[in-house]
Image 1 (tube, rainbow, N blue to C red):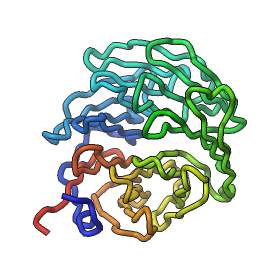
Image 2: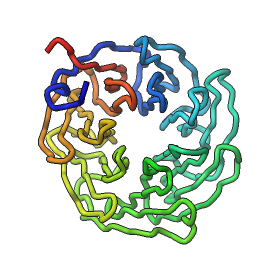
Image 3: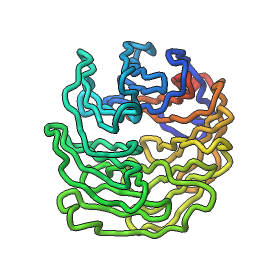
Image 4: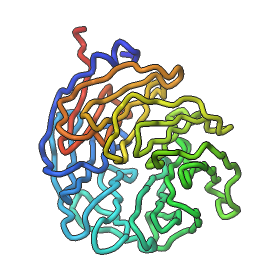
Length: 313
């Protein structure tokens, strides 16, 4: 089954989960697509089985809080940012709920985390205006970049370069093997007037970069030249919250949540709105991602929804 406009328009909520009583702040599919991991403001981590459509396990992080949770390469461990006590990043074994390692260094809240798609490297960015490079195998920071502003960052699909968005106006590209030399490319974009950049992602084909904001615009820029390609609007964000925007695995569609509880979908190349999907979300849909392997979408407010296409249409 190919993802085309008509298929996207048939997506319906197949399963709704009410495991959390507060906002789900991050979701992440395992690389194999069979598990989904969520972190929530109620300090819970929930693991979902995507094939069975069930919630598999709930872990608590009451002492430190939990945000920005990400699978590492296996399905059995994750990294996440703390929301209480300190700004340490924690490396957790999901198998036995024990911490494997702590990554100390940031002095303010961590706002961006990205795991390399190919190895044990990850990057973090914080309100302390630094980007830090880490290796899962060592508690020591592998490198620090002073961003001069609050950064958002992400690896490209090959894991060879990463992009950092600074001050909601500049995108810098770094080569992982020589990042200490500084960025090899810098794009200046028009500074956002009414919102800040809150997320940055490469398309799965590596050709474009999606910039999400805490306003009602999402920007798409060329990953090589930095030229602005598209601006996606029409979704609602009247609460100034960081709404996630995500690509479909074929890079053809862009999905975003909305504060009115709907999911909005655009054609990435041409920019037009493909669908506005109603999933009966009771609050703002902050998290949205497409499964990397299965024809399945996940979205979350304080509830978690699995969406599937209606095959009978």
